Image (tube, rainbow over all chains, first blue to last red; front, top):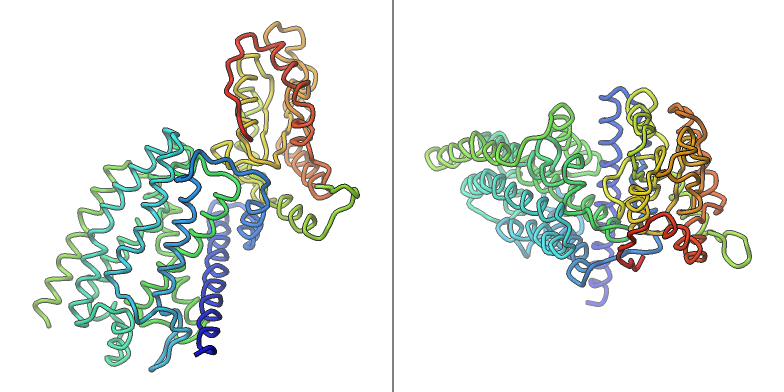
Length: 307
Length: 181
């Protein structure tokens, strides 16, 4: 009994450290790739580590009240909690540090992944900065946009596998020998298009929009608050990537496979973003309620009629 | 930052290395020098390879880059932006106008020496300084940060009365809020 608690704590720490490292390095790679595409040299890939260490070693952090003080903590709570429910590495019948993998399912995760954004919205609302208020309203509107195709895609695969649990979906894919993205391709396409909005790269960076909104909800957060938000963002990017790899691409059995799959998946929003300008808010929502939603509905119908 | 023994501990060395390699710049571009910032940041001279990156708000920024002359009206906004930045913060005076007024040396509504109003860590001379000179100024600042000598913010806190007196001398309608930086 005593031993298993220590293994749980070790598993928690190892998972968080892995997610943080991979997430921060991916952020650095994105900046490097963006720079190379714009014909620049670009910062080194470990640049985001310097940024985070520097922000943590800031001496002051002004806040406008306890809700703003709490908001980055809520964001990182949501990221780490979501991370605990997702199997990172798995294979035939084994799983790497089963933190809380068997305790929650996709429907729980759907709510948990929104929790951080809502916390940030409350915190940004207290700062009283007009940029924050506009950014929050834009971000929540956009979330209403991309949640619909995302939920439709998840409903389709949950009906396909007759389970809502992530480990159940992994077992289903292992038993069938194919990935879910080949079994219900329409759901995968809808999920990919929803993912473009989830990562907030251009053209869907309407909530942050540095040129018009001064970085939106985060504009009053400096020093350690910003550091906490960057940490949370790095972990959360990893969470989203691993979740999609798990439910659509059969998970990963070793670290190299995990990095290859998540990196290839990450390049979809990143490369789409580098070559795109920014949408207006209503264009972005109209995008998500158009083709992605239609493809999602078709994916659900496909599952209903073929299975 | 140096401690009371005037030497750096290991933590200071790590923190200063991170601060040196990650400078978030708030470019205060009201003067003509603002035109030199886009070439510094974009493909040709790419300042991001040194970790220098533009930031949109004072709260997130480390370096205040004052580009060119400051009218007494804009000085008020500069002071306000500077006081909203989080410690440790640095100021770079850009162009001759921040040193001696430059071509506005006899103007009635521009300030002549920026260092009298906010503590400047590095000056970049020239009218205009080219992007090479701007990057050189940033590298100078990085050297100061590494040695723990870029402590303008502490100077500002210690001599706040002197700075405030100077600021109030040129800004007649002083109705600024008190910040708890």
